[in-house]
Length: 259
Length: 323
Image (tube, rainbow over all chains, first blue to last red; front, side, top):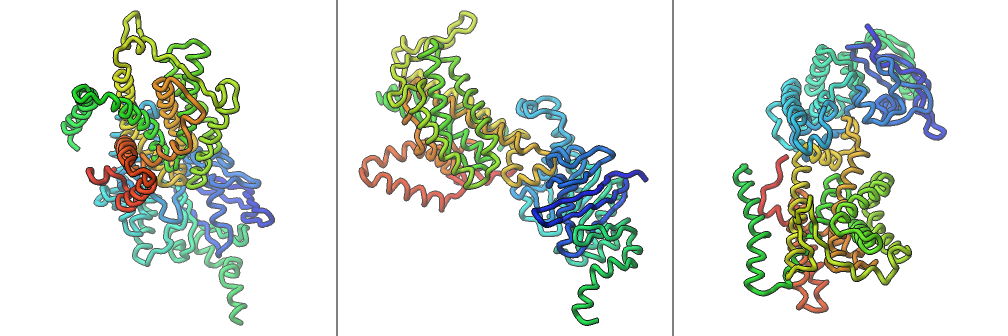
């Protein structure tokens, strides 16, 4: 399968600290690739670099061969790299449906002036967005909550809404920032099934996550970071058997407890 | 709200401001009220601009600067360059919009209290500039500005020369109210189109907005420019009515009042600034009898109102806005 996203030699320094150090990997089309690593391994920084929320010190990110690092976040989103947020970042005071409709903004053909005047293109956009929003909400099991104000939603549904917002932008690759954080086992399993369904629908997904069992279950491939460097890459069974990974996750603690 | 109800309320509103008010004033002989109501209409236009910046999540305490700027642009064009008043009106607005783009590009990156503080100083900067620049004639200001002349399109006079009118006060009232209606119609349309939703998305979460592809910097500047356009137009008419403009015509107090008008009327309602301006303006006048306690009572009432009605006066009459 072709490469969707290519990360090469990506480095980010904050003063003297090298948060991400010369990391390279690629995400193939229609796969779920997870980035894991102990706390402070540089996962979040890497995530922000890919989503263009940070500019790399060196190295680059390419989407379908086109360089997207060093762009403004909204330009990267327009190119097709769209992120969700770790926290429940949504438009709190809008209805669930409006949250998803507004996220269709990228697809609008009408200009701001067109929307102001209510031109035919603008009306066609509105109708198309509404319909698409309803489909997305149905896909993620949020249809019954469409009219609810977003801040009233329970935690699990908020996360789903975050993904719905991401989907509405029609991304080439969807970046999920810790989609399972703070979820109980049942919620996690539902989310795993949901993300897999998105993959089966043809979406490419890159996620950053702590929850090891969920990552093992969901991922096609895994990249492991430690101290800003990539220490392993492979399928879940390969990662589970990898010495360096075991050392990174367990080694230090084993020594600390005298094993 | 149903469409017929909407149309009916707009019709009632138009009938009140264009027919009932002039008829009542003529009957009671209180022509001084024209000046007051004209002021309310103009101040509400400037406040509508401030409201729009609130709508993108910025506290704007700098509208006085643009009102002052608009007033000077109009006055200078009329006095020094022999322009008729009418073309100076849009030019003043556009001048302020252009200036606000230059000012807004750097300062709109600030949020919350930081943006508010910078805009607060803008009014003072504008006042000091007006004092210092040769073209503004310093503290003496620009005085004896002629009343607006006739406006003809293709030889057809649509607005007569104000100086020849028996009652220029009524003419100014009608001018201000017409502009107010246009201004709020534009605002209503803005807010209820996708642009309004985009502004709301900025207000609620700029990071998320940019992650779904909204050009937040561009949208912020556009909203701020529209806001300043309204400020400039209001200022230009004020200069024409008072036939003068001074560095102290709009001060920090005015900027703060523009903001308070929005708060009082309700930040969630397009027509909030209109109601807020009306109530604040008349409220302040009514409290005049209390003499030295005027400001104390006024500010106390404001505090109580904000505590009791955080969503503004309109939240009493209308259900909370469902988006």
